[in-house]
Image (cartoon, rainbow, N blue to C red):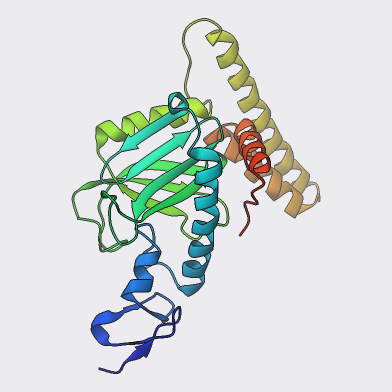
Length: 255
């Protein structure tokens, strides 16, 4: 078999030491491990690989300056074969894995950080090796999908029914997607119903605008934003919390 050149480090690699990415680029197994467990060569190319490494540099700084010192009482943890930690104080969450495998004692840990505000969907699913050959068919996974310019926007985390219920309850409460009980619940639920009604009215107005010859691009943007609010809840406070945390630490989010 012909040897290839690793696009990242430049060394010559034989067949058993090479990893072919979805765009046809080759990297060596050592460089592949640098990306950690969220990266997969069947779904990502070299551009995503390079971006992920830049994200990891930023994420390490975020962890050291922001997350490492946050109160444990503000942390929600969802532990499986991977480790998901969510910090409400900064509106940031991270998956902790290690380069090339799961977290172990003395391992080289990676903090894959995502913003609460960007979480688009979370669902329980059966493993599908056609999506990721590391998944086991028939086993349960929690798929978390994120909006935004991430190198990896979908995370398949090993899970189960119990973990999914715990995680979905937490995020539904964060985004105001559940009916609350107790003191002040009536006001909160009524406010949410009013907000949903306003979003629905905004969508209807946008359609009317297009029918009357209005700007289609503006209407489409408004419809998308209103629909996201109804389906995903209000993310305003989470955007503000994250911006405040990053600004206070002097960290730029974009890489």
